[in-house]
Image (cartoon, rainbow, N blue to C red; front, side, top):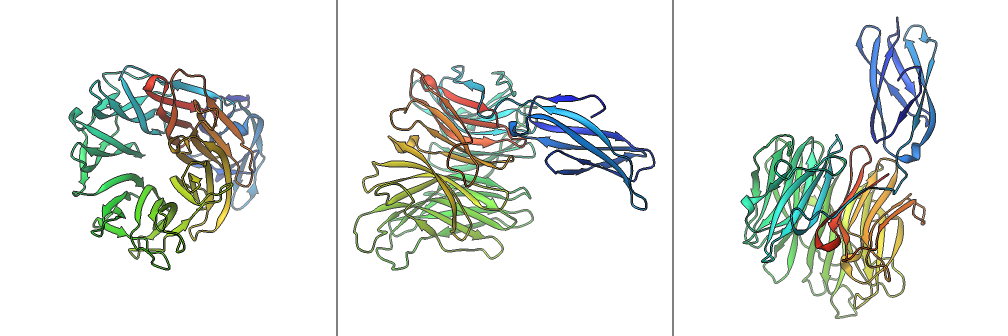
Length: 464
């Protein structure tokens, strides 16, 4: 920043460099009340940065630069004008249903700090056999077939499950042709050809459905395992820094214990705070003591990692319109207050009246807010992803609602408001297309992957 106004056109850090003679420190006071403390690099030179993450900040602004000394207080302040001109919220920045790798779909997507995009792909061959691959693109969506695509498990048959990135390190959850899950890892994929190696493999009968990373080094794989009594229990494998791996099974037991045969299926899991892992999904069984019908109902299961004990399953039928007595949670994230974000759907007894939802709740099950996202013709079109945006709003991914099924849709909500803050809808394609995964990058970048036009891997990135 200097005396001349600058214009910021993309998400990311804005670097500040200030010369202040005889100052012990310099703080930057921004238009929104945020205060940035600059670090002393050499005598009289102070440096730091602040993030621009959303078009909500668009417009002209003035930063106040305040030098100070502890013994004399503030010195004479200077001002630095700047403007933010990010693309409008929900504006299409990238849409691609590329055919270079053949049929398939994007199972998950992540964004690196430099804006590069990483996709976990499930590819479908001419014999309909599935294989798995990673593909890295630059922020404009460009990739090189020879350098930016890595076929996993040596190109053998494979089911792609989940993807996560931490500090440039890539973690991949896969299932091989024999049904055995494996957790794979590769450092700095795409920047150099690095080998992929296996961290862990599952036992016969286990199914892996979700992967979670903790910023302090923890890793969790969540899934199911046969209980031995004809039903499936939820299971979590956790690796914490400096500790032995743990393996925990969880069995939902209703208060009346009627028909104690419930299938628990985690659809996602997420670390919350320093010592909790939360599994979400649905439990299937006899939920109503006066009704011998099997229903699926969403669950939230917080696990205290310090004690190794779960809290009770929190099971809900749903807050839907009409006769909603079933529900499923498909995706989870955490907001900046530590509340749980859920995306999924509710439905009636036959699960024909499918209504999409996003829920915000505390870990004890208290529902703070929810929004209804419309009705869907099939469960796979209902909300599949939810993420918290650093500009303080919720982003949701889903397919098209009734009469608009051929739509790849993203929308955003401010918690407490029921009308979308913005909406992106990619329609009018030749074939059915819809999202399966959603990510918000470290600087507020928004991308979703899934099935694109022509049954090729589809990727959309929009302004936030």
